[in-house]
Length: 148
Length: 264
Image (cartoon, rainbow over all chains, first blue to last red; front, side):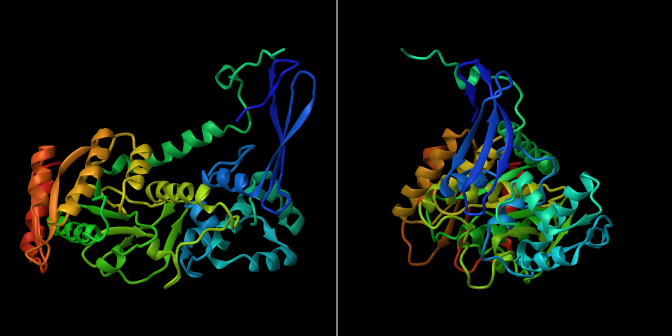
């Protein structure tokens, strides 16, 4: 999937992604020559199809988690299916605000460990000391984490 | 007047989205993980109910008893039975930075299966829009196969047996994920109906340039009459590696394991 600014005959570049939370996706692309911006809007089925491929429009800056697609998409998983090894559980890093911790508890167990890791990696990469709900919202949009 | 628009392949500038690069990275992850696996062996039939999983589990046990490091990837996501056939207790899957530890059977078969992840008695279900599920569900199952290959810490294996569901679609997905096509072990029962279904599957495997190791005839000596294995063997120029009776002895499995080892 690429976008061409026909007037400038230039390939447009990915600019920003937004996930409104209703299963749809918006991705903005800008022409590097004239600055014109267009938005790609996908319906829930189209958004799902892209997610099913395990790719993210706009890319991502952090490494994929083990079995990220399965853990993120399966809704009938056992709540105690996964356990982190000692090394993973003991890793340091940014602290969690009380609000962020409370929000994390609302994530199903099946995927919670992975979601926690993704937010930690995101915060570490950006030198963020405390993970708050606002940081989680920003990360969710930047990383394309639908419903996490 | 028609616009003079360059086409997809004409546009070669790097893009932050990098969807193609993301796909390439996925494939590389599979290749890196399987670099320590000597052979991927697909157990397939194209026909349901012929005992693919039963044969897979019996063969895996015999291979381990023969001293060959063996893993089983249960690729039947909607009807996973391998853990039960390998007497694996339900246990939590241990996550490492680099992947997920496979479950290990009492005999030492390494295994991963959707049955290890799903709630008891619940079907495999995915988050997503309630309509048009057929559009994306198969894509998600293909992604699950990729992650089972790439994200399970299989370690060094002489062979990774992939227990495929009926049909040829999962085999095609497997072939697309591997650098070289898998070896194929076909399972049939003696009947003409099974023969015809397995023939279609084997032709699909040949078209994908897979190496056919041979055919196993299962449920021999019972109510199913016919000579499916011999006919398939003649047609495809492959050996009948085993004829499995209803209550096979360890020697039957050992002989099959020996044949598989000799065909490596």
